[in-house]
Image (cartoon, rainbow, N blue to C red; front, top):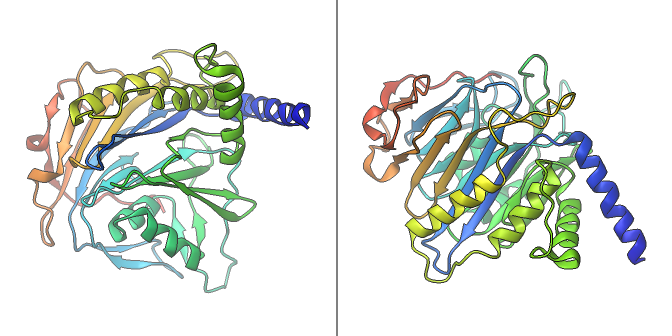
Amino acid sequence: MKAIKKLAILAAVALCAVSARPCSRVVFRGDSTDIVMVGRTLDWRTPIPTNIYVMPRGMQRQSMPDGPRYEWVSKYASVVAVGYDGGVTEGMNECGLVMNGLFCRGSEYKMAVEGSDTKVMSLAVIVSYFIENFATVDEVETWLRDNEFGINGKTFDGGTTSLLHWALTDRTGKTLIMEYQGGHLNLYASPDYQVLTNNPPFPDMLAISAYWNDEVGGMNMLPGTVRSSDRFARASYFIHHQPSVGVDSEQAYTQLASLMDNVSVPAGYEIPGQPNLSMTQWRSISDLGGLRYYFKFADALGTFYIDLNHLLLNQGAPVLKLDTADHAGFFGCVNDRLKRSEPFKPMW
């Protein structure tokens, strides 16, 4: 049985080597619930222009332009990263709930049958739906277990299908992973689920990580490539071997930032014939207790952040936008660079 288990792990590793497209997510949990941070890298073969929006409470929203859909008034304000100015990649709300979408090639969404009354959720706003309506992971999980919806999304980058899985983390440090397989939504919830990358499916990834960290022993050897399973194993080892007791927010940030560097793909790196293994374009860190959203582009020297504590977030406040087209000089708090804006137009 042990040999069969190892063969299954190696088969999953081989699958991952063929299909993975890098993105990594790691949760740092201190011994105080005030210290919970989520780090994320976005890695892709071509540039994904990303602007940042601050969305106030009380906005009229919808999940699709027509047909069976969700309509809501935003309960919570949020800061969101928007790719191509048309789709939310990740975001954090004022309650400290963070949601990130990562590429997952094996995803098979539930599709709404034409003519049915099944509501449809666009990939462009699915992150917004959850962070604008819920404060905790438990609230999201309860809603998901009682509601089914279809997924709709446009292709991008010359025809690439948007295949994703998602992770949410709240101020308690608990994480919920949403992963579709064969049209069925699988949910995995635990404070111990601190790492997410790409393929293979999450349970298989846990088995691969356990092999490296428990059987091989992380201090003896860790896989070093940019492939999804290797990044998962390294992140899982290091996040459990960093100090956490008594760590303040500044220490937590620097420790998590260094770990995210470890699982990033160097600028300019590529493997001939494998454009799916691509450089890290940007890195973010969400401070759930401090309500700061940190961001760093790979081609810039500085890290900058948006501080939600010092912005007007009430109903009637304007939408604010940080245009990152000229981000070379961004450093430190950039609240003063935010400009009044129309909401982004979703790529339905």
